[in-house]
Image (tube, rainbow, N blue to C red):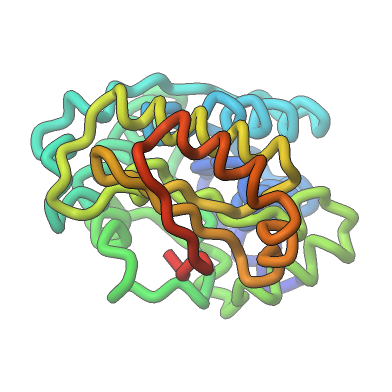
Length: 249
């Protein structure tokens, strides 16, 4: 704990890229604990649900931290809607460039984010964009893994300690499948309805007609007990559906 706070105290008025997830919420908590002057920014795009933005806003409001919400039309960024192999990189570059522009105008000296020591650059091409922009990742630099962040968050009483990962909605579409507003809405609305059955951390993957519903391994029993209700929801959004265990993202 002292290491992460010492690392934060050495930074010049950082701008925190805040999503409201487990990692960035813990980092915000540590910024407060370190007593540093920082600002928090979240970028709202079509790749996140409004629920995520509202959750981020509520977390900050409860702690008296102003949160600047930057609205970004991510599908207008060249190359993003094509959904090629570089989509994550292009998206991250646009998102953090938006934070850099806004936070720079606000007098911040650097940008920090919640990348942790478990995050693998080979699986997260967007991390290259962070390096190019000069984003600092204190959790990663201090050697804190995802497991560490969850454990420390729980000790601190943060409600986000066991929050499932919320990868962007674009990950539900196969690479090379063009991304449209309509498909993103379909995915968002379907997952929201399924959440009403008690699912968390689930994914509705869609290829234009067929869907695949994936749930964490620990929720397969819930899928078994709600199969009829889940299928009734799913078939409102696709012509056919298969099921499986959610893979890591």
